[in-house]
Length: 96
Image 1: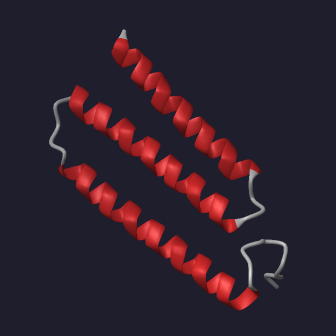
Image 2: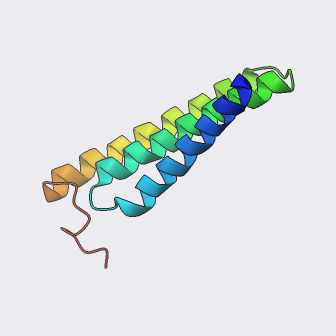
Image 3: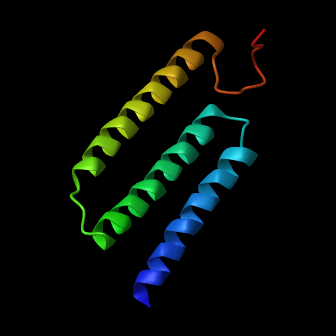
């Protein structure tokens, strides 16, 4: 029964992260935080899945490396956007 509650918690985390990603698109920092929350929920899902099927955890290390690279890339885009435009609003600049 406890395992089912953890699976439901991971599913709720994933859905909540996606809802924040879709609805809060005014600031880049909120979008990046919601993406990291989604990655964290996927990581928890993979931990539960790999423990359930008794698989090695090496794939989780590769997943964490890629998620750290994604976070560093997002922060570098955020820093360059703040340096060029002065804020992280999406409405303050034109993509065309």
